[in-house]
Image 1 (cartoon, rainbow, N blue to C red):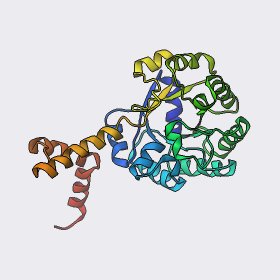
Image 2 (cartoon, rainbow, N blue to C red):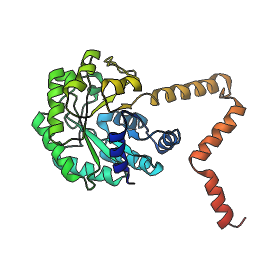
Image 3 (spheres, rainbow, N blue to C red):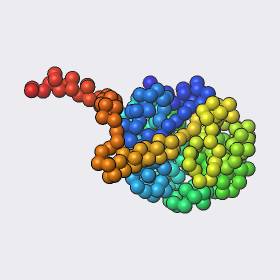
Image 4 (cartoon, one colour):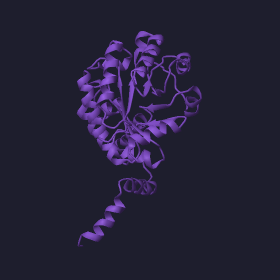
Length: 289
């Protein structure tokens, strides 16, 4: 089954899709091995993993990560397409390239392009509704597989108010977007939105967000009415802290602080994820020792 078709089936079958974020191939493979149905490659984590900001990412950088992750997994991948990397023509190319990279879907947002770094502080700049509708229609026209999922994202709730965000979300769904991703600022707005937006909704469970946007459990998401959520910081930030702990131990004590016995199965787990045993088998059958 093609991954885009698999994603569409999941969106119809599942009450809620937990979509963890991978920023490299190993992370994607690990998430698949743990039983997740789909994976997401976000702009924040891709940017951070390259020591830059999401708004400064190029399409090529996001494509490389998306292609690496997609090639490493058998489950669907959804890619953050940012603001579509430009005007409608740029959006069309982005859709084609991301689809060619092996993704099952992407989302584009109604912010200006190029985005500005202060977007991360909640200072957002949304394009006119009509321009975003044109981008959505361009994205729909560009996909070669009709099952490839086109999501629209609106950032208008914070900058222009809840009502404007709802209006835009419904407008984007009417334009043909399969799903809309929203960013409500308060718990009240987050609970109201699924009742007022006439289509499937996506959320971003952004732990550590400085705007204090609401956070939900997976059970709460399904009950409230959201279809899926991404988790842009849930893995990246704890991984960074673990690296800090190990390196600090090396600097202060001369050892990593990891349990040597525990590291044996940990390393074997990584070797299994990358398929090292299969490589050994192939070499034993084809290479003279």
